[in-house]
Every structure is written in structure tokens, then in C-alpha cells.
Image: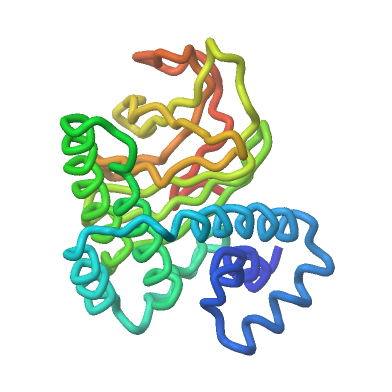
Length: 246
């Protein structure tokens, strides 16, 4: 598939959030006529953004505005060019800003309806995760990759070896029996390391999940495991993503 086709696939989120210019909007609109997967992606993302809009009544903490503006000011204007055929160019400035803003929205709503002590603990965890997401998105070596999930759906990864971390998201994930779950793994020359359970929503959306400890030559994999997790993979990956994965 030509590299331009991969670029068009990655515009789905930006298109839904109106973070594209007129030329990109026209190209992607024409692309939708021939791409059933992108039409489905756009439908699901519009449903998600609609739910975000319904929750707009939640008032975020005042300092979140300063964090969002600081993240925007650190976002470089030009993204580095990527030459690998399966490697998607890093997100544009508007796309990165949209993702960073979405992260802040989620953080602002995270503590609603949770008991005070649990809310504070989750808020601190969310803040740490948000800082890591912004660091990965703004890293000069950040690359974005996407791949189809064997059991259904699409996974997207933003990876930075400088930050030794990546951000994993998925949509369209197939539901699993209660006793089973999706587990993330760092897979590489040194073996397979568990990186946490991925918890899809009812609509198949999952993430963003931050995975730290990324080493040289490692990829991110997703397997189906017992709901409590496993110390080693017990099934082949349903998706495996990395710069050298073709």
C-alpha cells in the first residue's frame, strides 16, 4: 500500500476533531468513499467525542488550563520525516495538541463520583500518566504506528525510545468472556515482559495506556490471557507493533 494511503488512515481522529486543513479534509473525505474501515473509525470516534461533549459540565481543576497551554507551547511545529514504509509520520502539531487536550479533559473528569481517598490516589496516578503521555507525544524521536488487531479492531502506538515509553490505544476491540482479558507485553531480545492489562469499554475503545521501560529492539504486543493476567504469554499476540515490524 502506498505511504500516502497510510497517512490518510491516520487522519481519522484529526478529521473527526476538525484538526485538519482544507486540503487534508478534502482528501480524507474522498478517501472515505473507498475505505470501509475509515468510515467505521470515523463513526466510532464521533460517538466517543459526542460522549465527551455530554460530560462538558464537569469543571476541571483551574491548573489544568495552564498544563494544557504548557503542553501546546512545547509541541514542535515540524515533525521529523519517517522513511520506513509501515511507519506512520508523527502527528501534526494540531493532532498532538488535540490528543493532549483530550488527555486533560479525561483527567478533569477522573475523580467525579469516586470516594475522596480513592479520588485523590487516582488523580495523582492520572497526573503522572498525563505527564508521561505529553512527554512521549512531544519527544523529538516520537513515532506513530498503527496495525490491525487479528481478532478485530485497530491499535495505535506512539513510541519514544528517548523517553523509554509508549502510549497504546485501540478501538473496535472484540469483547471477551468475563474470565479472560487483554494483556500488554514488551517483547524483545530479552524476553517478554508484562506491561499491564488493557480494559476495553463496552464500545471496544481502550486506552490511552502508558507503558514504560521500553528498551532497544522491543515491540508492544497484545495477547488474550486470564482476566487476572499472566506472568508469561499463554497465547500468540493478536497484534504486535514496533518500528521493525513489517
